[in-house]
Image (cartoon, rainbow, N blue to C red; front, side, top):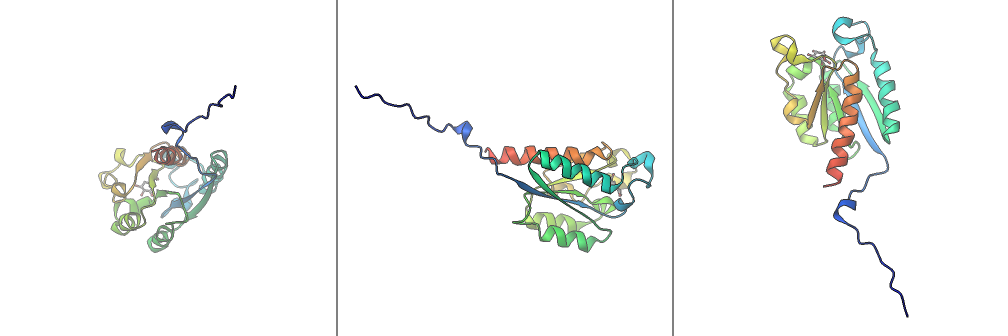
Amino acid sequence: MATKKAVAKPSASKKATRPNRRRVLVLSGPNLQLLGTREPEIYGRDTLDDIHARLVARGSELRVDVDTFQSNHEGALLDRIGGSRGVYDGLLLNAGAYTHTSLALFDALKAVGVPCIEVHVSNPEAREAYRHKSMVAPACVAKISGFGPDSYVLALEGLVRWLDRRASR
Ligand SMILES: O=C1C[C@@](O)(C(=O)O)C[C@@H](O)[C@@H]1O
């Protein structure tokens, strides 16, 4: 008697396909090159290079290639965001003081539609009133702030979860 082999049907829950590797661009704005010596009681003692090294290491555990960029110039940040569509799966953006002023950064994020997590080392909402308003927040999928230099790594982990969840929908 011929026996039928059971063939497993793909279930809805198996739909999630995880891409092999992802690419994430980490952008830091004005004065963040001074981390390490800048008001350490607020920002801690890690340099931006320390943070970038940790992001690259965590990224390789998460199968994410991490590129990093810092600039004090709004236009340079805009150029990197503007060139990110189709190149990067996601962005992390600590726009520094431009967070509170830059309609142009908001517009750039909206224009490219690449998912972005807003990042802050400090917790701006717990500081001076002029830091409470974020121009970029409405163009971001989430925000991580107040964890010191760990904010960047937590934001990378959060972005990966966000991308995984989107891929499984
Ligand atoms: O430059 C910065 C750093 C910051 O973005 C942060 O990472 O905590 C917070 C901003 O208010 C400030 O202008």
